[in-house]
Length: 108
Length: 116
Image 1 (cartoon, each protein chain N blue to C red):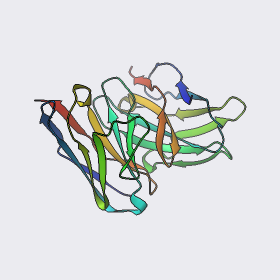
Image 2: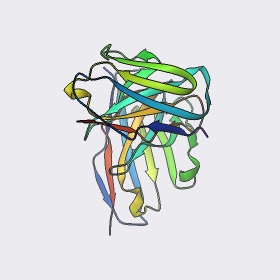
Image 3: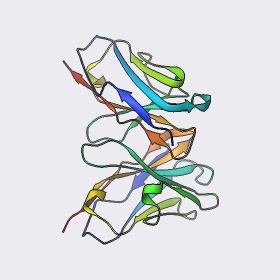
Image 4: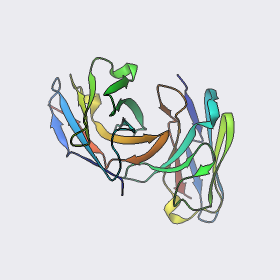
């Protein structure tokens, strides 16, 4: 089973700042089959990035994903008020599917 | 447009079973695996398993083996998640999710509350 560990647990930033979220896998995620999701309170998660670096349809270009193997990063270049949410990484290379524990991005 | 519409909230007593439905529309139902993911209050996302609508094949997380059953009805493009022997720690929002390698569409979620 691939265990995903996200850091930090909570990130406190101001609008306009840059956010860097990390996701580390316990073993290599083949073919970069890693996705990032955003979840706001009371809503289902929303796909942001798949294939480690491909933005989903309609996702603003301030969101970017990078990484391969065991280390992946989601970067938000300039935070907008609506970006303050919880972010999850997920691997879809292996069964069982697994998620990181989430990073909460809060307004400083 | 793709939509996954789930059944409404449920309140169950410990030891009971619950069945949640997920009706798909806006795409061809059978080729896409349907996964189920749950989220306990204030917690993260937990994978439960999937059903493959084309042939009914399933795969379950070890944690839920023997308690969860995923089925589908191709005539109505609906998948079902049944969880038995409910405990208080099964209180969660349950999501159906279409897999297109990654999870591209999510249902709105169904809150299942287990309480005596």
